[in-house]
Image 1 (tube, helix red, strand yellow):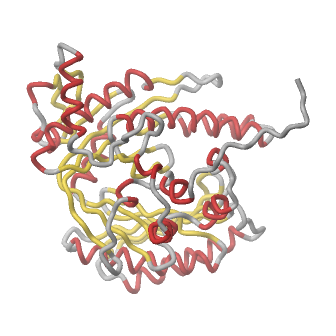
Image 2: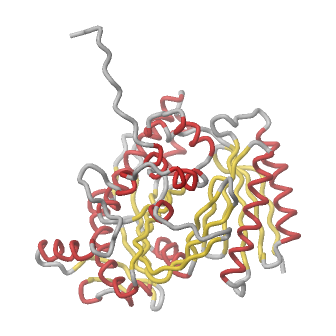
Image 3: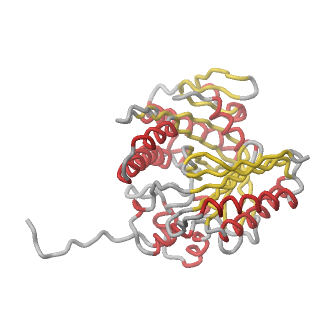
Length: 403
C-alpha cells in the first residue's frame, strides 16, 4: 500500500568503520612508528587464493557485451563469488591483506610457538573453501575455479609513502613461498610450502610430496570427530586478539569508536577517488565497479644481495617518484605488491573523476619518465620493466637488463 511517508534510509557506518572496511587489520590496529619506510617483522601464516577462469570469462564478456549493464553483470558475478570466500576467511580469523586482480592474500599473525596450531586452522579453512567454492559454474559456460597456496614463517611488513599517501607491502621468503605454492597448485588443489609443511603437525595431514624441499599437496586432514576441531578452533581464537566479538559483524575493526587521528592515518592508504565516494556517503556496494582504464605496470627486479632495509628504501624512493609523475599525468599509483624477484607498481589512469581523452599519451609519457629515473637512480635494480594496458594488455613494453 502506498503512503506519503518516506522510508528512512539505514544509518551509515561511522567514517572510521567505512575506511577500515577497505583495509586490513594489520593497518587498522597498528601503532605508527615514525618516518617512512616503516619496517616491522612478525610470524604468521599466509593464504593465497587464485581464481582461475576469470580472465577467460572477461574475454567472453568483452566479445559479447553490448551495454554497461553487461559489464555490471560481470562485476556482480566476481563480487558475489569473491565475497563468499572473503567471508569464510574472516570467519576463520584471517586478515585480508589485498585482492589484486583475481588473487586474494590473507594473513594470520601469531607468535612463533602458535604457528603449528594456526597452520591447522588455515588448512581446515582452505579445505572448506575448496569444498564450497572450488568450482563456480557461470551461465556463460566459463567455470571459475580455485588454486590455493599456504606458507608460514617470518613476514616483514613495510609501509612506504609520505604524509599524503601510503602503501602496505608484505615481504620475505614466505611471501615468495605462498606465490610459489599457488603456481604449483592445479585447479581445486591446495599446496603447502615446504617451510609450512615442516612447521605443521604433520600427523594431522594427508599429503602428497610434490617436490622435495619445495612443496606438498594437501589432500585431507585426519580429524575424526568434528568436535575435536571445534576445541582446536576455540584454542586458536586466544591467539587472535582482533577476532570478531559480535555475531552482527565479521570484523572488530567495523566497531571502532570515532577517532580523528586514526581516521587521518587510514585515509592515507585509500585512493582519493574512493575517499570522495566515502565522504559523499555513497553506499559501500557502490564502491566497486568495472570500467575501462589505462594501466601502467612498473616492475623492478632487485639483486638478491640487497639487504632488507636497503630494499625498503629503494621501494620508498621509487614509490615517491612514481606517484608524483603519475599524478601529474592525471593518474594514481593504486597499489604496490611484491613478487618472487622484485616489486610491482600498479598505476591507473581513467578512474572516476580522472577520465581524460588523452590518458594513453599521459601514461606513455609517464612510463618513459619513470623508466629513466629508476634506471639512473636505483643502483640495486637488476631489471626494470614498464608495461601499458588499455582495458586489456596491449602496446607499451620497455625492458632491459641492468648489470
